[in-house]
Image 1 (cartoon, rainbow, N blue to C red):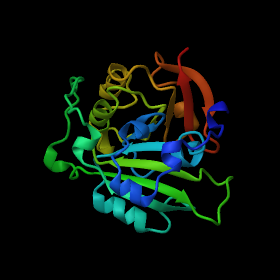
Image 2: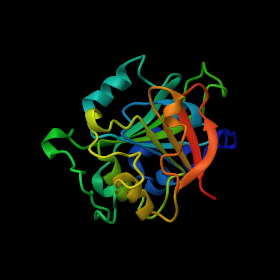
Image 3: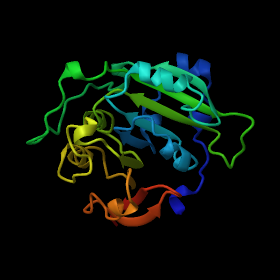
Image 4: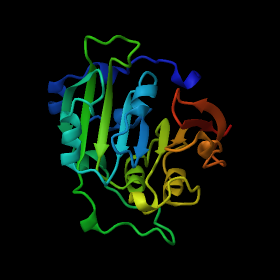
Length: 247
């Protein structure tokens, strides 16, 4: 699959150290450019596992995960990214994420009522760079990758971050609609997230990942067929279908 072909680590990421992460200006544009955006992500590491050689910046957004949840994942041997250690970490402030401020340009539609503020986790944004440990080789995954993790609504965060650029890929994987706590359906091409993606940036992303639990047959067809109808196959061994942008 062409989209899985390895590409070199970008210079901005290759040159980062733990000290530079703490002292230098937050590299917002570099993190957004060529990234994968994953709303309602939980702590799913599969996009990094399978696309980490061709995409080196991952942006996860999930308002259902507290900072304590994130810390527990990082501290748990079985829950961290296998074969990786944290090279550096930095808490990111709001003005660093949206230096020009943010105004919501796409509003929820009928039946899309955002959850009450008091039912959401306290907002936070943490930036990590992970480095592959010495006992693992190139066949395991990229030498390093960037992960920006936000406790935020997936649609609102997309509008805030990608108002001037576009991620390379978006992931809609078991987004938790209904009983899962998501007030809007990311798979619905007329719902808030799809409308947010259409309304921002200069173009649509190149790739969509779509999948989840159950049978592969559930994910045979594109969920946004007007934008993504180029069947690029499945992630190896996963119920995650890869769709390319319409040509």
